[in-house]
Image 1: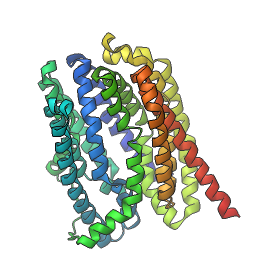
Image 2: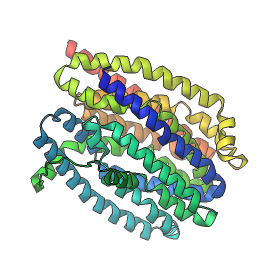
Image 3: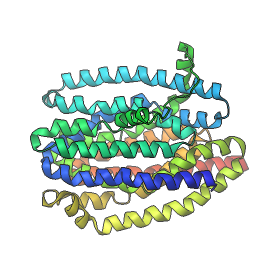
Image 4: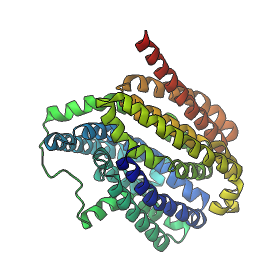
Amino acid sequence: MGRGIVGDALSLYAVQGLNYLVPLLLLPYLLRVLSPEGYGSIAFAQSLVGYAIILTEFGFNLTAARDISVARSDPATVARIYWTTVAAKTLLLIVSLVILLAVTAATPDFRRQWPIFAASSLLVVGNVAFPIWYFQGLERLREVAVLQAIAKCLVAGGAVVLVRTEKDTWIAALILATPQLMGAAAALCLRKRLAPAQFYKPSINDILAAFRHSSHMFASILSTTLYLNTNTLFLGILSGERAVALYSVGSRLVSALQSVASPIIQSVFPRASLLFAERPEQAWALLRRVAVFVLPLVGVASLSLAIFAPIVVKLIGGQAYAEASSVVRIMAFIPLLVTLATALSQLIMVNMGLTRQLLRIYVAVGCANLLVLPILVTRFAAAGAALALLAAEALGPILMISTLRARSRMKRD
């Protein structure tokens, strides 16, 4: 797969192991110190803030990374892409914070827990402050992994020291919202550049062009909220914060399991972007090798989680979260489906310019989720939300494969 990709992937595995191990070690502490209702309130607030994060990303995390990867040998072009993207994301940050403030103030249940929502909003600020897309485009993910590891350790240490009782729920929300801000601070302390050496002052036309360039990708990613953030938000409204806590335990474990493939996907993306632009046949050969290695690995990990779900849940949350084992079993194979969908969408469809088709797929998946979500949540609460998510994540890869096959047949004809 190339020494650069393998080196990046191995470095990411070494450091990302710490990145995911630290939150997993912190999770049992928070689940025991905070009540299920307290922990659920944080997950509920983060699900609302997730909409703002998607708005500020606006698809730039993929399109800007791809464009920088292709133009990496041209410092002037890289500077133009970087500063234009930063300007666009800063404007969106202001808009998203205003919207969050308005929604929280206008909703009684949200207003009642405003400290948790206010603390969680720092996730949006950190998302803009730490330009992972820039490092990814330049294939400097090892630096990102190190900075994130430092930040996660600081977060864990702060949580153990400052979060002592259920009354500290807002403090826990504040600390959990700061990893990317701490990563940016660590970069500055270690004198790691977060921007190109060359400055470019973007014009209004540059910013508008950047929005147009990423609009289809943004619409595609926004559509995923119809079955990601929406499931948590809907569950909290219908079934309460305890159900959200049970669902969140499954989500956290699934996210940790997805980290098995994340370093490879992150490392391959910029190289795949370059190869699809210059030598498509080599890009396909690279992706085949990645799939043969990654998919069986994630599949075995998913099967193991499904088998040992009750034991894992008991170790993580104790008896108070025993009901979460059924949620975890339902969600156990989502990492395999997400890994397949990520490879198909990010590594193939984005690099082939199939963002319009990708948008239609995400909209279809999101609408299908919305149709079954109320029925399943009303009847099965957290397990129902997990079932709806599993169905949505399974439908996505099916539609993506169908689209790519149809395109292949059209080319042959």
